[in-house]
Length: 230
Length: 256
Image (cartoon, rainbow over all chains, first blue to last red; front, side):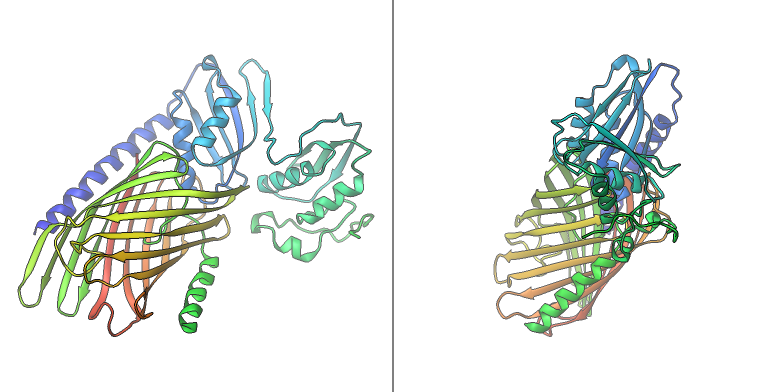
């Protein structure tokens, strides 16, 4: 009898916390705001499990005024809005991600007045100590936000590349680079290394098979291969 | 010994097919949920033997001090009753735990982490002869918990050494879990997971080996999980855990 009472007390305590907290959370998430808001986007690495990602939401949520919080599990892209009057800084945002036990990647704050602030993680990307003198646009096959993260990360890992932006809608990527360090061939072949075909290079079957199911784009069979790995 | 090694490798390899959707029910995870978080848990377990039944109803509070350091305290209620009509109930062995995540490698939608764990059990409880219920003896558990989590699959392994006080045998324990989500992957999580978990004990004195299989089901929401599992022996040393038929688990966890 004692054990049943103890079990009931323990579970009641935990469930009473749970029900109240879920209700509070629901109210908070659905609160409409009329004040000017900054739009925040940050790439967060290490989120392999939705349950664990709650730690991130909780940390971000500690800042009063956070609204429209969303996580794209496939890419790690986390977005929310925050009152412009409180002026969240990139450093505060990065600190919050670190406190949640994840690794911050690229971040972007679009201020309510239209100004844009960007942050790029420098630990994994080779520091840019050069001015790019060339730019190319190449077609890279991919499907989703997870593809975008992989494609851009691969391009940015090439020494001499200073910026890379892939558009999910068009499949086109614009890359700025230093021509004495990088050639277009390097960029195309880097894409194939991570499993993505381009308009001039084709990845091998093994790299393609390694892609997550959602990233397995429909392969074209009419690519005129110009670049091949040595 | 070779057979035991094969079983350990087999259990670990099974884990590669797991999907990471929620915390395993019985296996510990190296991933912590952000600093200054409190997690309240309970995982009642009922050990059914041929001639007796044992209960442990714990109240567990975990506090994450920094993103890689967690401390915990477990306050259990323990009881047993046997077929001869004998029974006893009271406070179980209180324990404290420290877990330190010493390795973290994050990439887009995947992570590998490893942590060391030290658990000290104090002899505050009744004596039941079963370490998982309450021994009434000092116990020290030390070991490693590691996990790889990605959206496609996950791997979780615990390797622990249990040093028990009194006349009890020390043993080495390994655990692994395989989780299968039944609903699409979304955030916030609203998921039902099936868990297939394995636990093995190897007695330090003579290498005596037990292997258990646990089948569990879990409902995971944003900050609450509810779970239940049943564990049965699949390889049984005749001199270890004599007469154990099965263990029932039921629990919940809540993140503050």
